[in-house]
Amino acid sequence: MIDATEARTALIDSKIRRSQKIVRLIIWLTVPVMFLTLVLAWVFYAESYEFIYEMISALGNIYSFDLNNDNTISMLIMTIGFGITAFMNLVIAIFYFIRPVLRNNILKGFLYIIVSVGAAGIAIPGDHPTLSLYHSIGSIMFIFGFAMVNFVSQLLRFARKHDLKFEKKPLDFYLDMVVVALVFSVMIILGIFYILDKTIGFTGPAFTVPLWQKILLIVDFIAIFVLDLDDM
Image 1 (cartoon, rainbow, N blue to C red):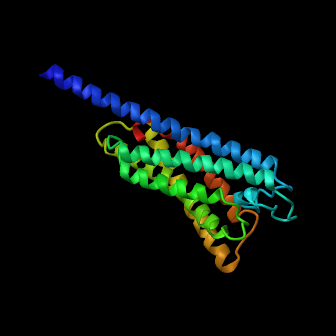
Image 2: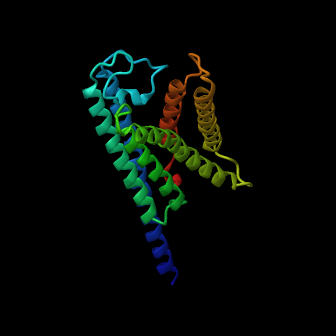
Image 3: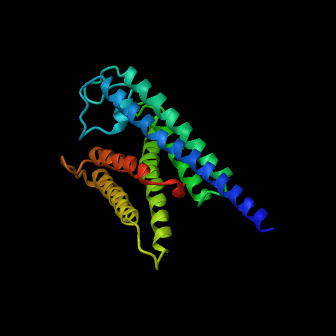
């Protein structure tokens, strides 16, 4: 009886570990896809790209931001790249929904749905004559949804390790604490600057929404690779 129970437990653990490896691999792959998309779109952008003052979305416009040049190549790169990103995040969401063995699978699946819909919105050119509203909504959903995925995952990981009250905390416990604070802080800063920009036009080289949008994206990229298998 004990052997059968242990064997069943081992089988369940094996299925959980396999599910964790699959979902982590797909999550990790989204980073090089997005990074390559942005780099190539930047290279083929129809004018000089102003990193501090232009939103990432400008790379995917039909026409360049300042000079109004034809931006077809960069637009296609962004549309294809973020279309793939949307599909990958949808796959991650579905995987969470059908794998209840994964921690907080419903919550994480819902968050990845938001990221997927947001990425699909970014795939639409921001200056499209009839679909620009969907692009704007998608951009907000993606950047804050992506941040929330990382924040929630890191927070859950931190909370789980914090429950080990009577054990010596490992070094990565404190790393989790730093990452949780960093993702949350940058997300809040971006939100504040976005509201100020839209209400009173508050801006400056160090306070632009485009700059902090990119900072948040970089922080998210780093946060993804800090997560380990047990956080999936």
